[in-house]
Image 1 (cartoon, rainbow, N blue to C red):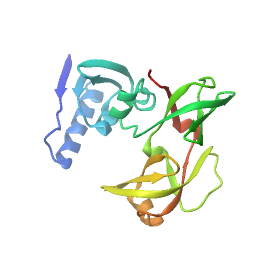
Image 2: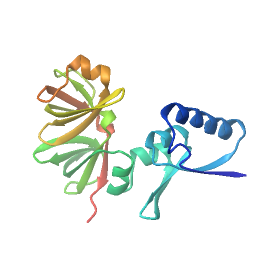
Image 3: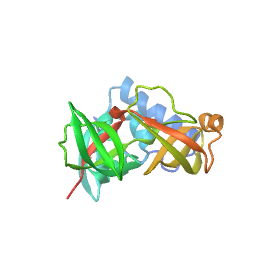
Image 4: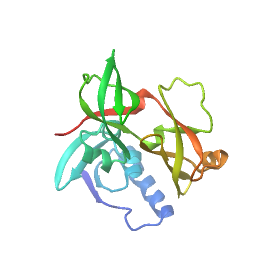
Length: 205
């Protein structure tokens, strides 16, 4: 049997939503029931799904496991839809054994990619993969940029921090981390992220 669910928590408060999500998970796992659920809640999809499909403009444009969808979107529209807020145009200027250097307005980002030199691409970075600090730190991460905070938005237990490091980036940090850093507009920070945290996507012509 297949259970079809269409936005089952769309009009519920957070407490009721959590209870329904637990029930859905219980039915799926304990009763071995196949479910097809439509949702616009990205975190809900990540929490409950084994496989996902992205519907845009009435078309199924990508299917795969949760990691594939959120980490390797096949085009810019899908990337935006799944919350890949940092989608930055650039061009490959070097590639050394699978570590590509992407020129972004005179700044260089390193990323894991097999694309050749001269390829126009998008460098995609999830906000939660960016860490902020008040000073430069020793790290295995290949990318670190001095930046200035331009906007801070509270999102419950998280803070969405927009920064300018020669190009615009958005980081998502815990509220506690933001308070420890005393992050506010004008604060100078260092933004750090790994080469493996940068997904390189071919720029559509």
